[in-house]
Structure formats: C-alpha cells, structure tokens
Amino acid sequence: MPTSNSETEPFPPVEPSSSPAKSSPRPDNSDPPSPVANRPAASSSLSGRLRRVSQSFEQSDLPTGFVAATGSFAASVLTHPTAPLSRTPSADLSSPQPSAATDDIPRRNTVPAVIEESSSAETHSTPPPSGMNKNLTGEPAAAAPFPNGYHFPPSYSFAQSTSRGLRASWRYFLTPVGFLVIIYGLNVVAWGGMLFLLLCNASPAMCHPTCNNINSPRRKWIEWDSQILNALFCVTGFGLAPWRFRDLYFLLQYRVKGDVIALRRLAGIHRGWFRLPGSVDLPIDLGPQNVMDSLGSAPLSAIPYPESKIPDAPLTAVRAPETKLWKMDAVIWLMVWNTFLQCCLCGFMWGLNRYDRPSWSTGFFVALACVVAAVGGVMMFIEGKSVKGIEGVPVSPEDMQKLETDREQGIWHYNNIKDKELKEDGGEKAKK
Image (tube, rainbow, N blue to C red):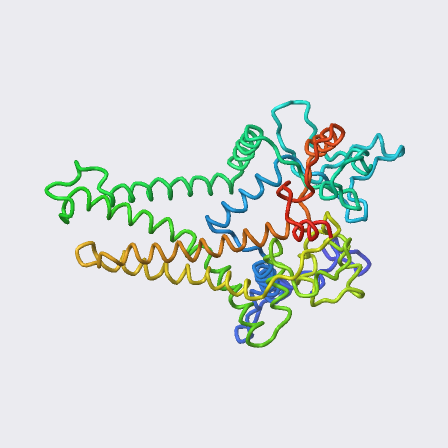
C-alpha cells in the first residue's frame, strides 16, 4: 500500500552519535577502536595508589623487634597502668570541666577503654582533684606539683604493682600484636632454654654412645633447636629489614647530602625517644593538634616531617633537650647489623650440614646478632624513659585520687618518674 509523504514515521530516526557502535559497519581497512579507551585514568589511579603506599611506608613507624617491644611494654606497665587522663596542651593540664550547656551531651573518650576489676570503674577521663594546686604545710619542694598542676604518678606497693602488671599483661596479650609478641617470646625462651640445657649436658640419657658423638640424641637435638631458633630470629631480622634500610637511607641522606628533611623524617618515625635540635625552644602547647597553625612562627628544622608527627605537648610544660645525633646513628646501624649478622647465620645454618659446619659459627653469630639488637633496643628504651621523665607521662584517675588522699594525710610523693628523692642536681632538673 502506498504511503504519502505526510505520514509520520513510527520511530524517530537514529542519529549516528546516539549509538556509535551500531551506526555503520566498520570498513576492513580502518583501524579497530581502542579497547582501552580509559587506560590513562586507570594508569593514573594505579600510580596514585603506588604513590600513597610509598608515602605511607616512608612515614610509618618502625615495627619494634622483640627486645624493643618488650622494653616498651615494660615501660608502659610501669608508667601507664590504667586509663590515662585526656589532657589539653594548655597551661592547665587538667581536663576541662563540662559546661552546663554540654552536660547532657555524652563525652567521647580519647583513649581506649580499659577494663578494670570493678565494674563501676570509669573508663573516661576525669578532672584531677582541686586540692592538688593547694600549697600544704610541710610539703617538700620536690613533692609539690608543677606550676601547671601536673604531678607524676605515685609509686605503689609490691603487691599493687604486681597486680597492675598482671592486668596490663593480660590486656596486652588480648591484642593481636601483644598475642603475637608474647607467643614469639615464649618460643624464643623455651627453645633457647632447651638449647642451653643441652649445651650444659643437663640430660645424660641423651649422651649415647657419648655426649659429643655426632649421631647421639644430644647432638641431634642441638641441631634441631639451633635451626628453630635461627628461623625465629629470621622473623625479626628479615621481616623488619625494609624499615631498617629505609631508616638507613634517610640517615645517609642527612649525613652525606645534608638533607635536613631526611633527619626530620627520622625524628617523626622515632618521636618516642628522639628530639630534634632546637625542639626545646618550641612553644610548650605545640602538638599534633595545632602544629599546622604555628608553622609560620616555629622553625621547621625543629619539627618532624610530616609536621603531624610532632610529639604531644609536654604534660609538665617542659620539653626534653635535643637528642645527640650519634645515638640515632648507633640505633639505626645496630639494627641493620642485626640483619647482616642474621644473613651470615643463615648462610652457615642452611648452606652447610651439621657434619661440615664449624662448631663455633652458630654460637658466634647468634651471640653477635642478639647483642647488637639488645644494645639498640636498650638504647631506645633508656632515651624514651629519659624523655618521659622530663615531659611527663599520662596519669590515671586512680593515680590522681591516691595523690590527693596521701597528700592530705601528709604522705608525700616525689614529683618525678621514679617517685624517689633525687640528688640535688637531679631534683633541680626535674623541677625546672
């Protein structure tokens, strides 16, 4: 049936731009369409992810080895027994009192909740007693609070300290990192103790036909214990190698090229125990919360990089002096040498069998690797404790209550991290 020109089409005409894939057949000699038209975006996304991972690795804190982790935990048990007070970096370090307008608003806890034995124990921060700022008759000058009202935690009896240590150890064991560290440490102690007993001939029944016979049960167990301990030492020696060599790279950048940013990076990574030159002159209220607002007035060379890695404002309103740079060199090189010595130990343990391996090699490299790791860990622990002894440690509500109660009864607690009467020079330094 013929149609007229006035009739309309049942569907609108298909425009070429609306469906480029179906507009027209592709000639055989034309180039095929690119199947990865969005490759630049994907490539940019991948490079951005790699850049973020690289920056995160550069700024990440160094995972501690077994010795350093044990020392840090021991320090936390002694100076951080319960939930710490939330403190502001202002001149008055006590927690602010809630206003009437905010009494009905639940306060957020700025520290992890700590489970105490009593179900009624508070897990949020509470203001310190007002009596701490009063001058009492007969109070020694070394026991008086700092001008801003801060006082170091008091000492406890042996039974109380043991109970607190056990509770802190259990809480630490329940964390993923604590569980792994404790299991790792128990394995090192168990297999190391067994090896020590075997070397001392503590089991005569294994000396068959003789104690030094290569096929005796004693020599076989010495080999098995040595291989297990070598594998355990590889966990820290090789597992921490990327962070150790990263720190060595930053250290060489500063020592060889004079790159101050590299030293500031190291200060941010090791902010728990290292203080930059000139940091003692920074404002006492300068911390991670307000460092970006003070970049114009504070010298950048005294602030870690990135700036958010700056240590918290000192609770005592006194900053620790700068750390000697050779201590940073010593810690980094000791940790790197621990990895090098572990490589030598693995070469002897895996490259030679027990028949051809020199008898002195295992004990020599195990002893050296343990010594260098222990010296580095102990150095970080001592420097960190020195910084805490000047800048202060968080105080729990239980500590504040004990300080006020003992103070009212005339029981004085010396205002230092050891709660002991120091020598005249040490006391003056602690109070300045």
